[in-house]
Amino acid sequence: MSTRNELKLQAAAAALDFIEPGMVVGLGGGSTAALFVAQLGQALQNGRLRNIVGIPSAPVVGAFAQTHGVPLTDLERHPHIDVCVDGADEVSPQFDLIKGGGGLLTREKILAQASAELVIVVDEYKHADMLGQRWAVPVEVMAFGWTSQRDFMQELGARVVTARRHPDGTLYHTDQGNLILDAHFGPIPTPTDIAMALSVRAGVVEHGLFLGMTSKLITSYATGALAVTSPT
Image 1 (cartoon, helix red, strand yellow):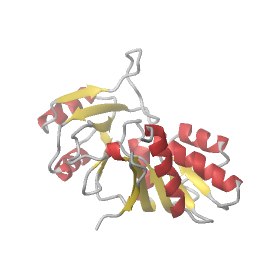
Image 2 (cartoon, one colour):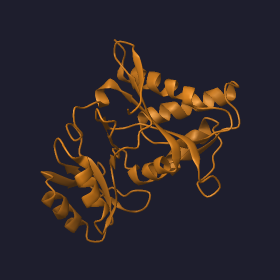
Image 3 (cartoon, one colour):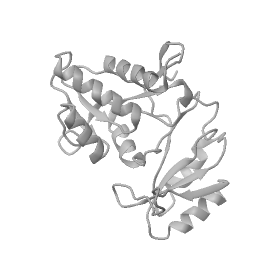
Image 4 (cartoon, helix red, strand yellow):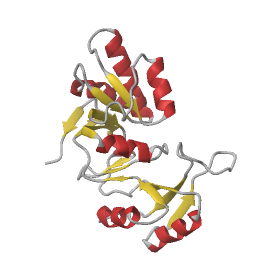
């Protein structure tokens, strides 16, 4: 029986198979994506890969990548990303995702949309029969009028909407200076409806529903098996 960290490492290492010399690589956040960044740095050091540049989803991701020897660039210099490797909080059978547990959803979605391929690395425990089964939907909102966004999400059907906070009780702010509201909808049979409603709402910066964006899904299992699947 593999430990949870071993499962993450197995999935992260498998993502290297989709990286080729000369690529621009989007670097997502989260624990599994961090393991990929470390693996990428090792592959550059041992010569398995070369001429790779990464675009981090956050300053903390960039700092971590630099400590592992991954050269960095940005979207202004490289607006087209070859492959973005990222994790997910929840994955549906349709390859749709909930992301944003780490608060980086807006920048992660920008990188995903700029990428030719989005490779998602997870362990088996991130799979769910339906989005929202175990995770709330993170929604980044402007601080101005944020309580009205909370009320709006409840009107959409969220049972509980909580403003994300630090352990000391202060409000959590994203790298853009915004707040995160975690909307507990429960199982979501039609995530596109919620995504569309949130996307047109003034004051909502971005939501953590990543729908129809996954190119490859790498899943590691406690049995030691590894599956690489794609949407049909």
